[in-house]
Length: 143
Image (cartoon, rainbow, N blue to C red; front, top):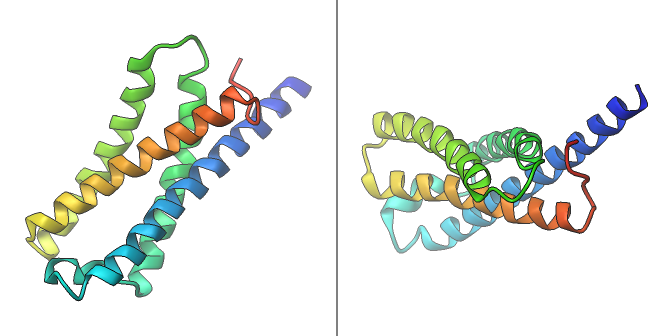
């Protein structure tokens, strides 16, 4: 029972770190887009407004799920295909959902490429941060 509790705590830590990293990537992207929106009309959809906070919450939830899943997947050995596969799977699911919604609402390919790239970048950065936390034993690997 004690081991199960310890695993849950480590999963919560991994999920919390993933959520924090993904939310920070989206927040920094939204701030950058707000600053650049005056130059490129394609980015005006991504400026800071109430929808940004929904986007931020979505990213945090995706990051939480990613962190828990990533900790579980990379528990054994140094298989780079597993870790990169998790990053790509999460980025594709999130990016394709944005693509479907974005194309219907905006029909702007530049915006869709930016959103898809954001999903991949977000998951890749979260994976790097989680790997650092796992290597420094700030988060213990799944056993």
